[in-house]
Length: 494
Image 1 (tube, rainbow, N blue to C red):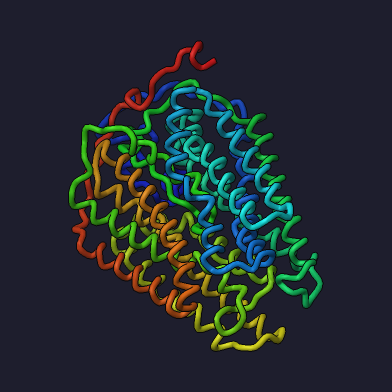
Image 2: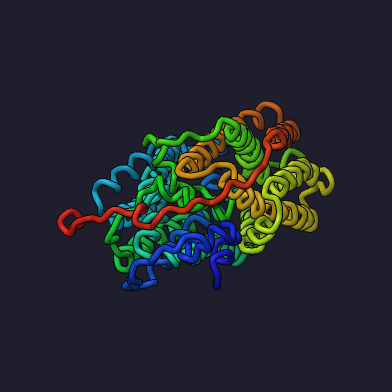
């Protein structure tokens, strides 16, 4: 993790990276004295939570499908339940943490409540209660969302920010990949060959794995209580956008976006500078693309479990392998995609990645037609094809995530960057929610082919909107670090 560019996967430009390290060639800014963290182990408190995310992302819809046999729309409603109040709750909890000055305990409470609710979801109940528990879990997890990244910056010296943010993202991505590996091994070793997806044995295996996911999140609460430290000063969130500090998910299909909410809080706070009018085209494109992505991924679990030819008719261990492929490629390319974007034009990397994704989506519904049947050989062949396709989707996400954020950061300047990033993340969440629900409706009404083709068309519309944007590089204008922080008295901190 040597160097700022490497730490953020090429997420900031060389000039911005130099500024983050206090080495701006044009502005000499003295750094505050180094304050060593009492324990760098607090980074690892996110590892069990990331493991829990990796397990619960596919498990929650799969348990709903196997246990209740709901319609595609109900499945997507359950998937969307954990995010329906995400943005308003993030704003609520984020503003509250800014005022209370005890960020650590927001994190601990969020981890603990998330784990408890996941454990309760593993207990047999009605589909209505299952939905409500997932809804409550989303609200609980939102308490930690606006705290984690800012807490990291507040407890670390500025010269380490880029490196630590990169490490933070990689730990979360690696933990999610490891969780999917655990899930795959769990079903391969724990379920006999020929076990039906919705059989009693398979459902029990999924329930116990979800309980393990909850236990991991609770374990994360204990490690956070032991290792996370309270900050000595609070950052001004609106100033961070000026330094190119933005959040992008390492892995696309995690149920929560804990690292992508740094600037969402600013949407409730006025700023002296407005986003340039021309940059709203980018935000409109982001909304459209988010809808298109989730029209595909929302009913994706239904597609994987449905019978041929409307689905792939796979069991749990194969489904986990397909999710694992995307997560592993996205995490593995986290650094390399950043370098590629940094040394090229983010706009064209962004558009090329979108076109590649639009070409991949229709290939998914062709797989059951190319390899029909329910024999072991046919199932394995379908699995391998879908592993390759979803792995390629992970590759496109690695470039999309980095290119889109850097594209926006270079379109908007000054303090307006924070507000633009806030809208970027809020619209991505809103579009994802709408796309997930719409995808379920389309899948139930028209089937897999029409749904996936509509997803492709929406993504292409988003790419067309990007073509209208004239890309230019905005000079980076730093401000002194003392403008970023405000001191907190010992009395208020206590």
